[in-house]
Length: 400
Image 1 (cartoon, one colour):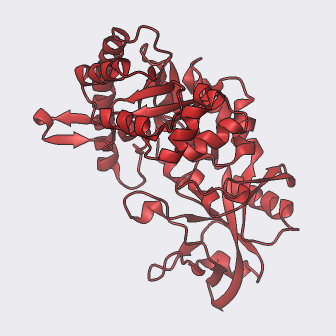
Image 2 (cartoon, helix red, strand yellow):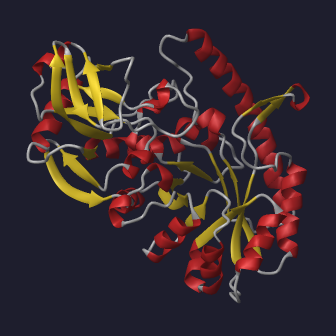
Image 3 (cartoon, helix red, strand yellow):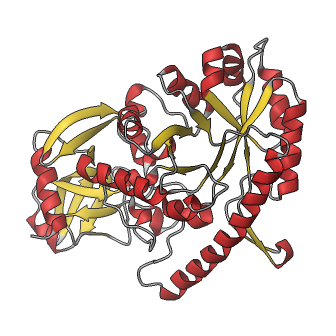
């Protein structure tokens, strides 16, 4: 029996009393992935990206481990909810226009001490001030550096379109703009190198593309390490008591941690290890989060149909954004239908061994987005479900 076949047998036994659709987390794999992230971080703390987890119980499990400290959130409403729930170090990784949320933040000393917001434009400071509604608490601010690699005088750009602050001078100017404005304090810098951390460099069947990605990433790492160090020096000249410099992601943990200027690493997807993280030379994790759909039809030889399963992930549309049938091994989509909202036909010889009601296990493309589809995660140890915990959705929250 292959390792994957053994996993399928365990998952089927553990969930035999549960009807699909359902989602699971294999705790042995999850904890092993957490250990690997800590090992790669080389002693620097990992700030946990809640976007990639979206379940309070799993956030608490990770933050109870050595090597993890703080949360990187994705909306202001989520940040405030987490702070009210007892998480005392929440960095909002994206700018917000949530005026009601800013009014709440500015009026509550506990929330203001726990939550740091992201800015990259003086207009964002004005929006926050206009939203204060009388609240006088000092707002903790993090500045975001644009990490994109610019070549040929800027005519070629590689990387996500995030912050407009690219040069040390621009980031330092933003730090001065915050320092001049009462009611704000710069406490950190964040720089997420998505073109390094979030792009696989060993794509199966694409050797030339994979080599090109590796060359690009090596160039980008060198350029960013130099520029990030210069940015930190420039900002510290304005804000000597800067608390943290956050960088990295699951795919670049060890590289970013090697930079002296970086004090902490942001990561989260490496806990669940969705399918987008299969194509990396820098690390290999164990798939820990899966979902199961039930067989509901047998249209013919070599074909079964499961209920639902069409859960595409965000990003540029393409086959890599689709979930993949994982267990039993050997199933694939009908190219004329793909995964559907209500039903998904699957082709392959393993289909002939599946009965109505049997589970087919899938892997999602992007980590935490799975939790937007399910209200609970069943936690498996060995071949037993040892707990069932609510996702954000299960607690009544859909922040985006």
